[in-house]
Length: 370
Image 1 (cartoon, rainbow, N blue to C red):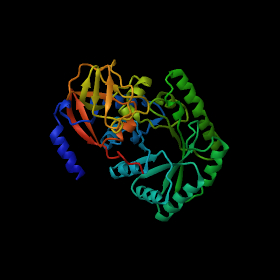
Image 2: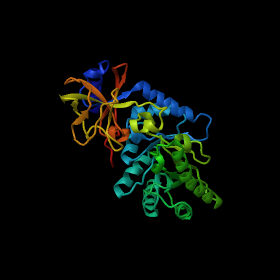
Image 3: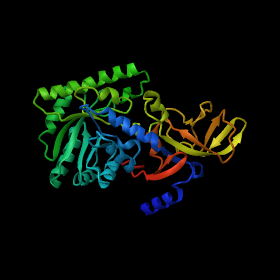
Image 4: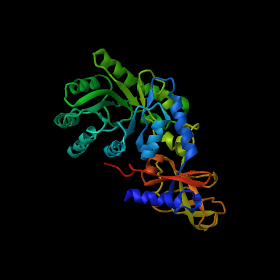
């Protein structure tokens, strides 16, 4: 049924002008996206670090394949087990769940994924690791584990240093597990606008992970890799000796908030909307919180910098102030402030070039919260 629906969408919309699309519709500028993929891949030419793109950004298998094809990738990252299941069933062979997998049912699902591909997960406590170990040993499979080290995010992770060493020592004998290394995420530094301040914060934070790696190796424990980083910090983390993988995600689609920090990448993602009401210098569009992520600020209007959205709070409406002389029924493109949560609200990407739809890509991981 899903394939039939996609075939119908492609048959109806490929070749159509964007303004003919039903709205709201999630758009992807193919040229801008291809530029971003090529630029990120090229950064890792002649560098020891490699790219492990984050599926959570777009949740689209087609786009994930294009990321790997762009080069210098070792596999995919995802945030949830449900995303890993999608990737495993779609032929991806190396996937890291950069998150804790906790709960008996989730462990059962994880083992099924491990029967198909090389799957790795983050851990920061012994008991969940023991549960995975028992299930993996019983099933005769191996699950890779990266011990997550908290380098300042204040979320998941063991404290750097001795606490991490203690946990790793307890993990090493567990059957069915393979200790692959360390995961560290400098999320607290990602949205620092000043480049020098961002660089300093990232380097200071990652030094905790690098020192922890050195401590483990001093005790004879091989650390296969440190995995972390983001699109906003790839040019910092990707040059640090001892950091092996960069889990960049948003670079593929970009949003206006990320573009402020890494302007060499192009905003490829937008939400096509339609004007449904007007009054003096005000217009109402047919999208709201259920169609565009806004964690880092209200959406912006493509091509109309003076038009503003002071309060993006309605579920299905967007009020635009200082609106141009738009007519009812006219289409307008919104640029969200957060691409990841915007993509999670949609089920297909309408890919376009030169104002026309050139393809429709399903977003198989959209809504996979478990």
